[in-house]
Structures are given as C-alpha cells and as structure tokens.
Image 1 (tube, chains in turn blue, brown):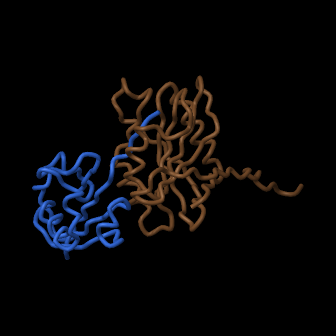
Image 2 (tube, helix red, strand yellow):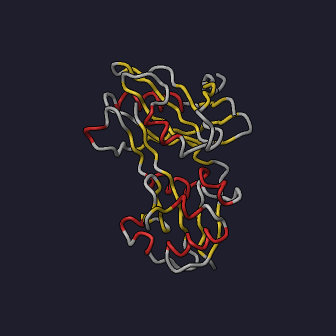
Image 3 (cartoon, chains in turn red, green):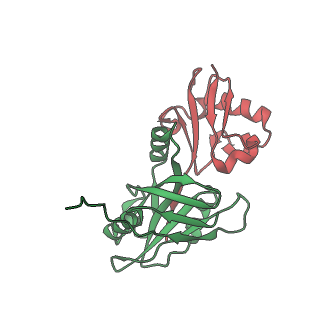
Length: 91
Length: 155
C-alpha cells in the first residue's frame, strides 16, 4: 500500500488535476521526488534548496514535518502526506 | 461561480466573531457545499488568530492544522471547507496586498471579509480567484436569506 499525497487546488494543475497521488517512498522527500518523476514541475513548486517552500505546510498523517525531520521525515506504506498552503492575510 | 449564500445563522456568526475580536482580526473556516454557480455556506467555524499578538490588529494567520483536522472530519460527507473569513478592523472589506498573497494560494475558495468599524461589523464582501494565474479575484454576491422562525405547534 503506497503513500497517498493529498494535493491542494493550487497545485493540481501540476498533477493533471488529480487531488491525490499514490506513490512509494521511504521519506517525504522520496515521495515528492517520485511524484515529481511523473509530474515534472511538481518538485520545483514544492521544494526549494532542500526545504519545503515558504507558505506550504506538509503533514504526515497529523504531524507537521517541520517539527520532525523535514523532507527526511520517514513515511510508511499507508501514510498520508498532506500539503496545505498557509492561510493568512490582513487589512 | 457568482455568489455565496450564507445560510441559517452563518452570517451572524461570522459578523459576531469579527466584532468580538475587535480591535484584532478575527478569522475562521467556512464549511458547506460547492455548486456550479453558488457556494452554500452552512457553518462558520471560528479559529484562533495565531499571528503574533502585536500584529493581530492588522494580520491574521489560521493554523493549517485546523484545515487538516476539519477536512478529516468531513471526509465521506458532502460538505467541505469552501472558504475562509477574516475581519478588517477599521478598514474596507476589500482584499489587501497581504490578502492577495494568500488568496493566490487558495484558488476556487471563498474569501469572506468582514469590515469592523469601531467594534461594529459591517456588510461582508466575498472574493474568489478563478484560477491560479487569474490576475485578480472576482467579487461574489453575498446572499443572506432570512432565517425562518421555527414552526410552532397549533394551539
């Protein structure tokens, strides 16, 4: 059972309109690389200099990877990786 | 998409929250149904403004974990997170430059802005970005149907 990556609306154009992609991988970075191998622009829009881009938040199941090992955070089959853009603003 | 309908007490809930947060910005999630031409909002879910306290008079931040958790709770239902609301204390209900940065990250999502002048909420306005590369969000018509009084038993 592969890892499921949930894609936000803003990035769905990069995954052919798909809102989730199932792919193998042992870390979040490997999973993103696998999605990127299938959808070329994906990786560049998610990561920058080996980090998740600002204003994007990545969770493995319910855990924010910033408080784990970032893109090196391990994942297991059946895990769910959610990408959630930041929600902010102000007058 | 042309309009957003705030059903039941949703409008009151968002406006009350905006007023009670004054002089800080109040914010929350909008839950409901996405139609072809209309977004029906069935619930306004207040969220803590997690921006730095000294910035909360002009800035809001919603913890993305709230989106994650609410999405999970709505899985296998017809409802979804259809948008966000936030207040503009002593400022008009139009997207600011800061708002625009984040609206661009959330296309096809309602951004409801409630102006609050001196602690009193005004008419909310709603905005919607059609696509990632749309030049600017469009304004949606905000409908607030009257809430029907509960039927009473005949005497």
